[in-house]
Length: 299
Image (cartoon, rainbow, N blue to C red; front, side, top):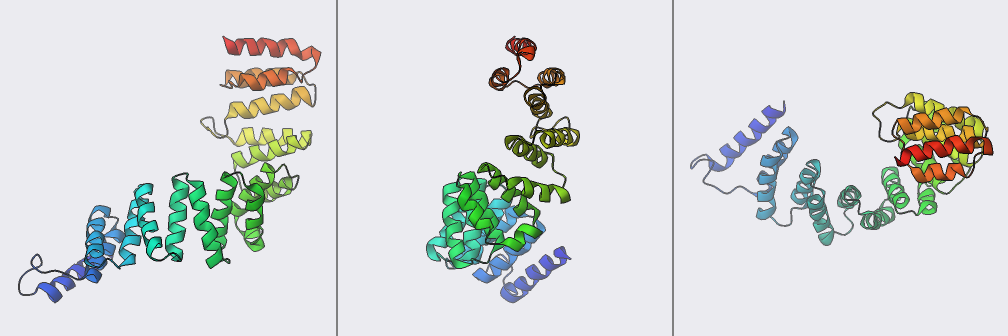
């Protein structure tokens, strides 16, 4: 169907413009170049699409659509800096272009340029305050900037989205956790009741431990361990095992924590500073075994 569409567009242009002198000899309009470029875009043939969209832009510099779609092409190919240049060039002409603002903001996120992304989202909120999708991304940026209280305010503007959108709910839980709010427990519980996510469960267990719900934290760390594949890097199974060992040794004074700690180290846990901190918190009966494990990590 798409190939047929492209063939029709190309054939129609040839008939319309070049019936007497051939396709290569006449100059098409910006709109016609644009149509060809977008047909190639839909086919996923980005090199050809980029060529025709550039021709459209050169033929008519006011064609914002060509610039916007050149940005989309660059973004699809992970050329985020180039994509940002295209989107922000539109904003220099039309500062309130909502599509360009959204695209520029998200491209800035992909470049990890959160301050610039936040400026775009601030303007978006002034223009379309009802946009829950933009609200999520704005909160994500504020969270990355460490402005957690502001991020929470942004998400709370969309209460229905928090209930219906799992990504929003998980971000909300993480924002609350970053502020050490006990309410994060309920948010994580709501999220995990409908979703399987080992990293979220690991974070949930950390929140429970922080607020001294040790039995529940231990249960959640063990669930996270069972859900986490051996090759996982975030979270690492060795980090989860260390967390289990920490609770067993400090909250329960349970010698099983020594075996769990040794397994964590055997599995690759290498945070010596964390083990040193643990050493200051364990009972006298467990200090020597922990000290021996710490010594083995130095060798």
